[in-house]
Image (cartoon, rainbow, N blue to C red; front, top):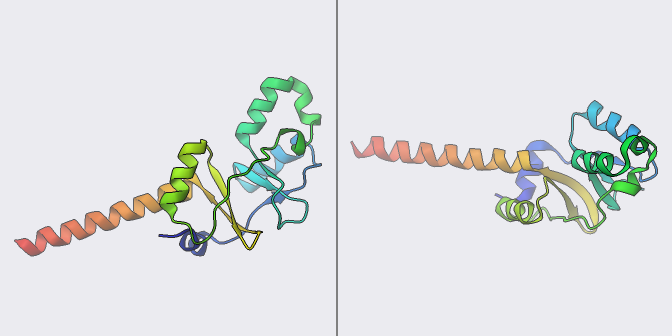
Length: 144
């Protein structure tokens, strides 16, 4: 299965924020959207960075109560690992494991077109396991 298949299932919508918003506003946005990370983008198409709940926790450990006055740009990860719609889900899973990340933006023709989360990867693997189980069950039933 390819990333494009995942995007067909979940959609291509990506929540983005500008780098100049406060971390307090970001936390409210994450809560309202029910998500764990957002892509930082000035135009909604290019990727300036990514910021997650994990970055907020690290920021709190470093800045304490002053964290809420910091901007997203102060805490975001700048060297963002990305994938393309043509990449396999296995490749993205490997990338997530190696980089210890949970969200990978999808880029096509240098434009943001989606995002894949660890939940999407796990869902894909569960679907694969279910298919394998059904095939093996059908095989076993047909043999008897």
